[in-house]
Image (cartoon, rainbow, N blue to C red):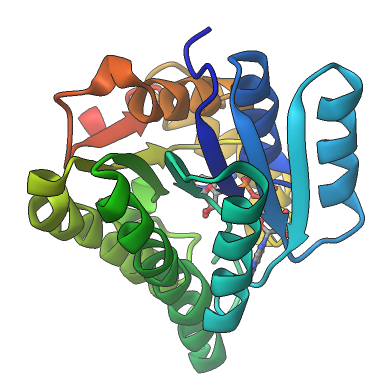
Length: 249
Ligand SMILES: NC(=O)c1ccc[n+]([C@@H]2O[C@H](COP(=O)([O-])OP(=O)(O)OC[C@H]3O[C@@H](n4cnc5c(N)ncnc54)[C@H](O)[C@@H]3O)[C@@H](O)[C@H]2O)c1
């Protein structure tokens, strides 16, 4: 097993890539503290994992709230005594019709950028004490290039995730903490997607992908697994595209 007895916090674990990553990590032997604002589907994912002999708990959590992060870290330490891995995955979409909406800009920075930073801020002191830890920040192809159908606040917030990953990687590498980013391309629509949930729009988006198909949530989960595991022990500060070649063009 590739994560035997590792303790992992996964945010946004009630759905999509977070849930897929949780299920894969459980199969690979990790002990999981799953979090989400959704306290219906989140506990259901944890219960499913427990039913199949995995080890998972759920904490309701808004990643944009500092106090929530402290509660999550305390819960992980109380349950398992350490934190080896953080998958900073929770997020909201920017695919809305009004590309100049100012509230969307603020929400993007509050959840997708600040939420990610608060995660780093919460777990790094624990990992410093352990002198070990692996953090995977979920950015996007939108953190690297622009798209016609996404609010620029999403691109800017995901770009912030990309570069804060590199800053944290450089700052904490001497203390045994690795920080990398994963950049999914066209994946199943997010719960909060508007424009990109439309089938005609999706067809157009997929035509722009060199592999001519959307990605599957497990394809991102496997990238998270590699970077979180000791197999990636000399890898920090990288951005791993999981995009069917989209950003290679
Ligand atoms: N789906 C895509 O096409 C795509 C592409 C690139 C990057 N991403 C990124 O991948 C990550 C996962 O996306 P997904 O496709 O699984 O989306 P999703 O909407 O299926 O899942 C995201 C989860 O995050 C949770 N969440 C939202 N706001 C939260 C908050 N403030 N606090 C805690 N939890 C919160 C939601 O309840 C949801 O369960 C996100 O960071 C997203 O930006 C998605």
